[in-house]
Image (cartoon, rainbow, N blue to C red; front, side):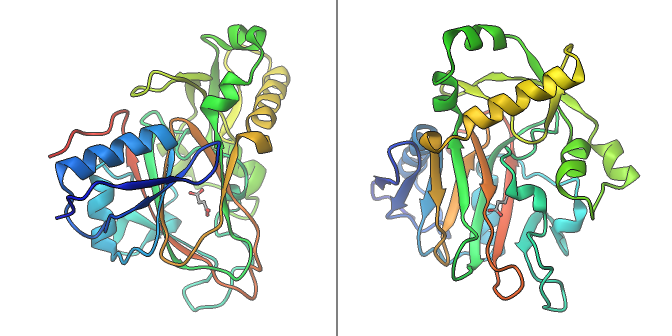
Length: 287
Ligand code: SIN
């Protein structure tokens, strides 16, 4: 049982903290859980170094934050466990795919914004890291909202964007379009562009690449506004870039963060991450 108080070391002035003194493979005390929850809400991205986590331990920790998502794109699911995704640039026979397995991951997005029941946390565990590149970049959507002009903040109040996985895949992943069944399971949904975080009460921009257009606005004008806001929201000044170390465990708050992966040598190097995503609006209390 981990009972010691956490050490929280900010990773950048914008967001992100490294958490020391926690072994995620072990049960956590109420004190540690509460400290972790507070750090997560404050820093939005948490990184734990040198974790030794098997799949069951990873999943057990992730489940404490809520029900695990079964991703509609079942081609990424780990065989035998639909709640765990393996992000790897290798095919099953060990040869390289030659790109990110999901090229859409290289465009700014928030996980699962295309679904009515949205994710709370995504957690990635580094199992193999490339020599260079393959970072995950994060952008702080509270700061991006605060950085809008008052006129734009007023304009966006109550405005909804249409999020559509089929649209975003058609933009980024020409080789792997969704199947008919996947499309039926993930129809377009509307979400408010200004999302009030259910736990901190702060306002955040909620867009990213799954946002196709604006409800009630002509398609082109809506797309132009989505693009303008995404460009604003992902400026360097709102970013923390995570340069992976082997066995890092990184989790982020999809309610107030955009993220994307960067390039590496997809043909000659290897990047493998184990991923879980928990659904929900609120982090459960300690149990
Ligand atoms: C993701 O978008 O969930 C994956 C990000 C990454 O590959 O760094």
